Amino acid sequence: MQRAGRVVAGWGRLLAAPGSAACTRSYSTGPNASPVAQQGSPRLGRLAAVAAAAAAALGLLPVAQAEPAREQQPPSPEELAKPGATSIRMAEGLEGKLSGMYYHGADKGETNPYAHPDPRQQQDAHGLPLVRAQLGFAPAVPPPCTHKHPVHVVAELESVTKTLHISPLHKYHCWTFNGTVPGPMIRCCVGDVLEVRHTNKDSDGIGHNIDLHCVTGPGGGAAVTYVEVDETRTATFKMLQPGVFIYHCAAAPLPTHVANGMYGLVVVEPEGGLPHVDKVGAREFYVLQSEFYGEDSEDTPGMLDYDYFKGLCEQPAYVVFNGAEGSMTEKAPLVADQGDRVRIWFGNAGPNLVSSFHVIGAIFDKVYRDGDLISPPARGIQTVLVPAGGATMVEFSVPVPGALTLIDHSIFRTDKGAVGFLKVRPQGNDKRRDIFDSNEPPNPCPGCKMHN
Ligand SMILES: [Cu+2]
Image (cartoon, rainbow, N blue to C red; front, side, top):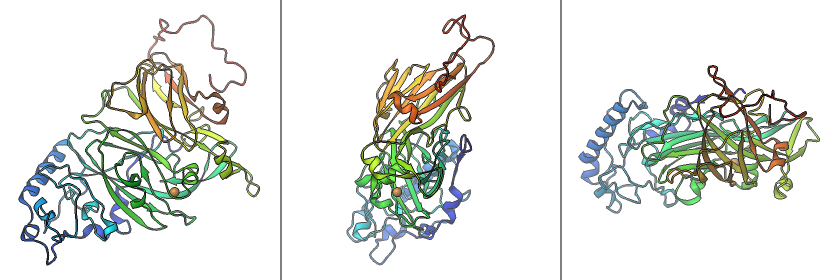
């Protein structure tokens, strides 16, 4: 599969993106600004320096190697509290720590420069180090979070249409984030600020937005990220809860935007990261289940045309993992080595069905139910329910070589595409016959597509 294993970052385009000129605006220093605002805040300056030093020590990639001279510092909390003193407001003051909530006051005609940090800077206005979001394209995942202090993560999502194979028989005119179904996986830590920069390049001229389930606030960010064609809008969201979260387009008609492929996953790691996340031999995969609704096109052979009423009746033509029947089967299975730990970030975009996620030949020894990364995981689980608009994370070991099979155990859906393989490659000569043994050679049943 061409997109397998591809992990990319789109930082370069951010610098040249339309509208980036707005990032160069300075803080309010108008006639109503106080001397404090005009002279800057020594405390914030110290915090910024400390954060920058921490970022450098941690090896976080700065946006630029050298920070240009900054003529103005962010206004102090005292300054922010004065009515009319500046063009921005914050729901909470900085309070001497890097934990202020970001407030989008566009509905009041206000602008918020905190949402548009200068990409040439190494920190945002709170002193948080600016880092690019590395995007994972399924089944690849972004690298785990290693930073020990909050950062400001910038993720670029682009709405774009693309005709993709959704099965060996059918192509489909997909509405996508960044050209793939599912859209990219984003990874950050609780306490981070996630900046979403949403650009619309839809060739059909349709408007799109993004509802991120990791966001606390109206619409999950949908209204503030709505863009018409060739527009870019940016919003910042503080990650208050760790977990595994779906994001999706929520533009009207919402079911159609989800049914056509506009969804992805955000992982917000808990403070301190996850256990084993850096362990050698750990394999992480991004798998997202979804449905396609349609009928054979009368105009274009081999195309499946979207059918709203099939969606309304919850009668999918396909139920798939990672955007297509066969996305993870013979030609492009997931691969692990005997003895590995396997971690699967599993989301269900729906739009209708609840998944009964199961791996044939494995028992989940850790299940972070509903994407809850705080509570102790459930143990010894065979099948986990994942609702539409929900997600989970499962872990298991693979001591025995051979092929395992990912399915939705609502079993007729395997005939609609919900099948994937995990190939466990042998390591050494120990096949662990103490765990799995037979004198009989494998003899798969004729026509079987689950036990290869
Ligand atoms: Cu959309």
